[in-house]
Length: 437
Image 1 (tube, one colour):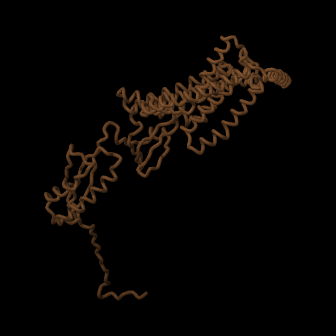
Image 2 (cartoon, rainbow, N blue to C red; image 1 turned 135 degrees about the vertical axis):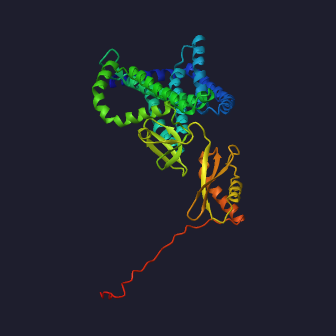
């Protein structure tokens, strides 16, 4: 193969030497420079259109990202779009020498690929990581591909056969094509899932849990379809692969039992509608908002801004309280005790006055219940309703402050707990002398 590459390089070098002083080459250089100039002007004209579309579809996150990436790749995109018509014009005009223009097309394609991939990295990774992957990994790789293509080695390397078994040989090109295919389907699956879960299904009136479940199902199905297409593209025999996976299924079943259990548990929870993103749940002493339901686990953010990652199977085996399953309106109960000298009716009015708060709903109206005659206090419950389940801690704190101030203004005391201690001394009988130790 190396000998073939050297022969191709020598042949191309001879052609370059023959063409370098020709008028045809000079004409192609001038035309390509004109293509770059026109593409540079079109870039600014199209940039305004892309910016308008990006702003218009800002609510659709994934679509806005698509226009952002396109905007970053406008220059190579317009250059590539103009190059092919120019080559056709050359050939139609009888100028058959299009060596330079044809030779530059792959370099423009690599330039376009770099801009697109770097844009994807910037939108999905932190700035430092995106810069690292873009400049330290992606750029050198594409430069190497450009050098190999310019020397005529790239096609020979891509056609290198790794195995000749089967009707379709497995080559470097087929493997790269398969990897690109699965990457495209993965990006497509994420974009389609977000569109269904965040835009289409909510606007169609679907419940949040059902929308999340359907979006997840479409996402995973798209990835699986992409994986099958990618495997067939690489040239792998799917029948042989099925037999091998069937033989490994028993062993993998034991090793992946927990993962499969969590995966199925996540689908059961979302499809039955018992839980979904945005719900406020309580499991044991843990209370928080469901952020996402993944393949293996669920992410819950607590009031302390701590994100907990809990396996999905845990929610099927343990009792779970969903505070906002069908209705986000919750009742808050605050217990307070006052001394026995207080008038219960006056206490009721004081508690209702203290219940005036922005987070407290006017309907259902706040109410007071005379709970019990305690050992040292009259016990009352203030019951209020709120539509802010994530602010219950703030609401209860504010209400306790307000209750204290309102009762103090009416000279109603909150008694402190009282405990009595009886001390009894045991004295010996008068006719029995005390023992001396």
